[in-house]
Image (cartoon, rainbow, N blue to C red; front, side, top):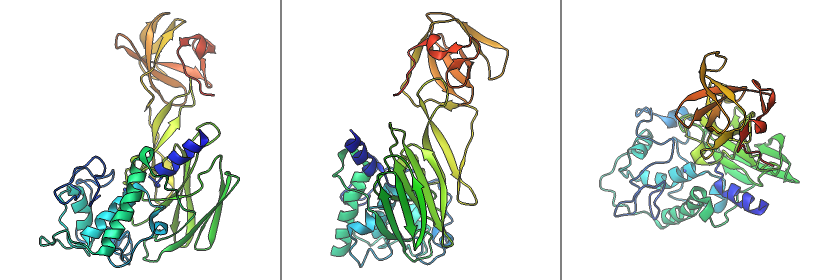
Length: 383
């Protein structure tokens, strides 16, 4: 089971992005196999991209926004791409055609590449690319398919080293990752090292792009925990220093958890009532550190879960309110909707009435002064 978790995690990382010989992200291809469908998250027609300069200038202009500036003339190797997440692979493959002036049918891709100073539309381009470029497309496709569909992957592991431009200055960083006993790791970038620890840490790292407009690429290190208590730690490299951006819950190296607009969508376990989870949001601040976005209500992402009431309980109209929404009695069914993850839980009665009840500590129902499993039948508690 641990081996399976490791394989799925490795291939789910991106860390967490198609034009020829592949249909990507559920999109469709045209007669030449070029991508025409939905772009990965973070590459949308509505992106605010300055067509006068855009990402290349924001990244310092040295590489003008290329993922691989020489993929038209140099054969890429597995060492070049094995640590890239799905979105970066997606862009790297499309970049090969964009360099020739391909006019994308996908509005998101057209806007993304149209912002590059090096991109120029070429209606005469007939999709003919060199043998080197074809080989690069094939190689990228192989990894791209695995990162997108880890359950159908070919067992492509992440690397422990890479040369990749993380800070957008046009010079590739030398990145090294070492791991001892699946718990203590060292990340070294251009000779500068940071140390971290976790439980069942992934044996490689992912290069991800949390904000596709800021010119900075990040590194994600994932861990599986003692009992599927997943965590992801993010790092950035700026001005010669490694920034520990923060650690969040969930395997967040996959592109579906990284919208590409400066957010990280974690999968956090509630700290009240039972074992259940919610989508949690973090954003990059001015110091390039992840800040938690607090909300008054977090909605459960678990499968709809109904519990049966065993003791009469009051549901209130709002947290802290004394206004009664409904009084539930033994035998009533409640759908557990979510919580503020502090004290109050939100539920819906079978007749559609909604209300809140209070929890003290992890699972004691405040109104009754008894554990939650004495009040509800059907709660879930993980080992």
